Image (cartoon, rainbow, N blue to C red; front, side, top):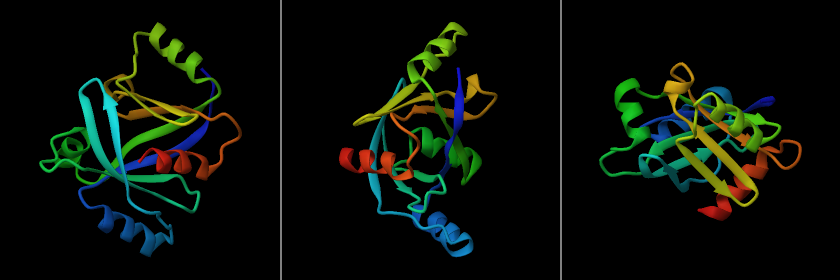
Length: 154
């Protein structure tokens, strides 16, 4: 598998406004509008709220959209508090990367697809405690490409 770069980091929180406000105030990182997304995983559907930085830094902030927070993001925040939730990596060939990992017995637990954008989600047990997302871009990375695809989806 050929990893070509870090796509973004994903921060989980119980309060999108608080966390995005802190990063905005202290680091001058701007965030776009609220997105409502559904992620399909082997544990079922998870409704999420997300804000994505619109400055190209590569930070997503996610929160459970479930009233009781009884999903992967809600459970993470309950156990660990606000913090690094996932690392998203760009790969040169997503199908080849998935096949390489499957050959090692590592299969994705979820998938996000929006337009030409596809991302596979891998469980932390397979990456020494870190939730890993793999994504392939059909052209050189453009920070607004994924955001536009997700906006069209929500």
